Image (tube, rainbow over all chains, first blue to last red; front, top):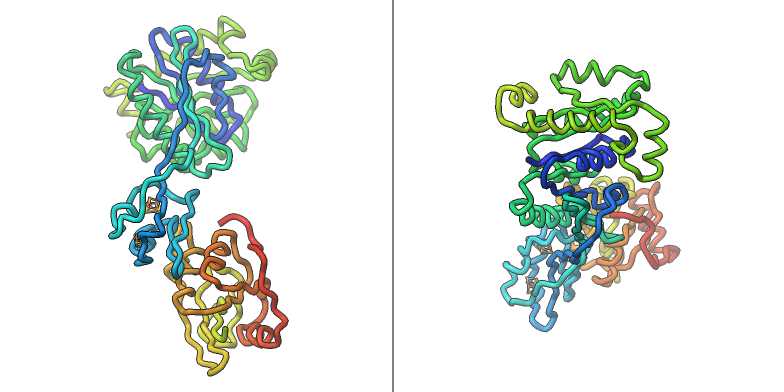
Length: 293
Length: 120
Ligand code: SF4
Ligand code: SF4
C-alpha cells in the first residue's frame, strides 16, 4: 500500500503527520520525501543516510562541425530548448524536458546526449523504516523529472521492504503535487480548520478527487474554531481519519523537529488508528468505493 | 541594416507597439528604404507554454531584419536575438509603430545591452 500525504498549502503539518505515521507503522515501510524543492522529512525522522546518487536528465549537445542548420531539431522541440538561428544552433538546457526527440530527428547525427544535473537522491534507515528522499539542485526549475527518478528508486526498494510506503508530497495542487500522489493507493489530505486552510483544502480536493483514488482528511490543530472543513467533508463523503488537537506541547515539539507521536500516548493512539483506517480505505471493497463515488 | 521588425498589436503603422516581445500579437516588418511593410502574426508563439521568446526570435530572424523594436525582452529571447545578430531597441511601449520607427530613423534608439525583463 502506498499512502501519499498531501496538503493544499505548506505549513499544515503534512510532514509531521507523515513522520508520525511512519513511527507507528507495524511492519516494514519506506518513508519517501517527494517534496524535492524543500525536503524536510529527514529533520523529523533523523535517519542514518547510507547512500546517495546524483540524478541527471539527458539534454542535447551539438557538434557544430556536423550540423547543417536544417532546423529539424528546432521545429520538433515544442519547448524551444533547441533553436536554430541562422548559422547557429542554440540550446537552452534548463528548458529541455529530456524527451530525446531532437536526437532522433537530426539527419546528420550532430546531436549527442549531454547531462543536466537534476539533484540528489539519498536513502538510509531509521529503525525498521527505510528512508528515501530527493533534493532538487538549486536553480533547477523542474521537479517532476527528479521526482520520477525517486519514484523509480522506490519501485526497486518496495519488494524487499514489505510493499508499504508513505510519501510526503509537495504542498499545493500544481504539477509536482499531482505527480507525487499519482501512484498512491490512498491520498491523505492534511488541513487545519481555518479560513485559509479551508480554501486550500477545497483546491486540493478539486485537484485530487478526479484521480479516482480513495481520499481522506486529517485535521491538524483541531479546535481552532472554523467548522467549514467539517461540513465540506461531510458533503463530499470525505472521511476524517484523525484530528490532532491544537495544543501547545505539540507546537513546541514541532518547532524542535520532534514527532507528534512522542508527545503523548494519546496522540500515539491517534496515529495507530489513522494507520488502520488507511489500510481499510486502501483495500478495495465497499468502504473504499464509497469514498470516491 | 534597413529592415526592422516592430512588435505590433495590429497590421498597420498606426497600431500600438506591443510591449511584449515573445507574446506579441505580431510583427510589422518595415523596409526603411522602400517603406514596404509586412505583418507577421505571432499566434504560433503566443500559445506556447514556454519558449515563446525564442520562437518569436526565430520568426523574425527568418525575415532578415537587423533590428527589433519592442517593449520588453526576456533573457532567453535576448540571447537568441543576439545570436542571430539582431539588435534590440526596447522600452518603446506606449508609442505607435510609426512613432517608434520615426524615433529609430532619427537615431535616438540605442541598442540594448541586455534583457529588460526577467523570467521567461
Ligand atoms: S530532448 Fe526533447 S525537450 Fe530537449 S531539446 Fe531535444 S526535443 Fe527539446
Ligand atoms: S537537426 Fe541536426 S543538423 Fe539539423 S539543425 Fe538540428 S542539429 Fe543541426
